[in-house]
Image 1 (tube, rainbow, N blue to C red):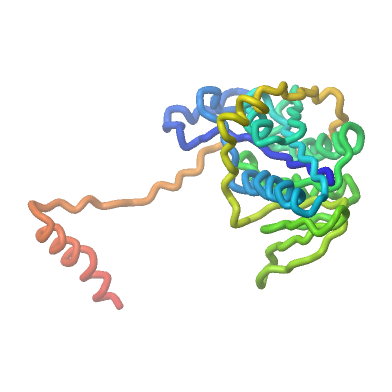
Image 2 (cartoon, helix red, strand yellow):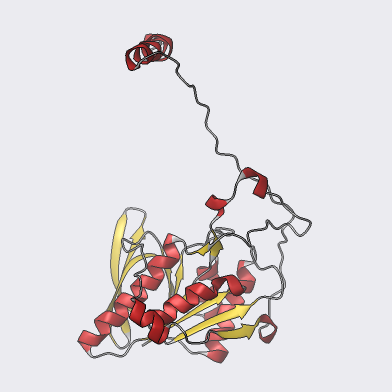
Length: 267
């Protein structure tokens, strides 16, 4: 079974200070100096794929893992790590234009890669990325491929060469189904949210393979109906009060007299 996992590396914006949030004329924020990371959805999708490969050894079924990202050079370190985890193929598609908020374009690239470059039996994607958070890409990939899509997948098991047992979340609980491939899986709040760490030996033996780099010019992008017109920072600051006092007892008295007692008297 051939399984493709698609991910989106995103800069760790928690490392930015207020002065770094400066939007330039191209509606971008300079994040070249911060580390690129994976979100929990993408980590879960990658770890689920590795678990499927591990299980295939006991069942005598061959599972071939490959991974794909549409990103610049910032994703190279992550792709090298996935090679060290013994993914068979790691591919990066170099964008020539801004695709941050263009899920249809990203989905079209993934679809064309599967149809024309590397046929697959299953495609796994994290539910959404930290950039855009549109949660559309996996659904659009399934629509373009003409495959069924299982959303909010939390657990996937190998049934046989052509079927997967999938547990996915619905409004009132979870459903477990036997799914025939090919299929697209959108991974949601899975319990396995952390990607395993490769050993130093595996990094030395497998992690030095060259990443396959393709140009976005080899793919046909759809005409976009939506364009990015602006960016602004969402402030999540909360009001706070610093209670002054000579000792803990005095601070506790001030807390009660000036803050808790008035609230209790209103009830």
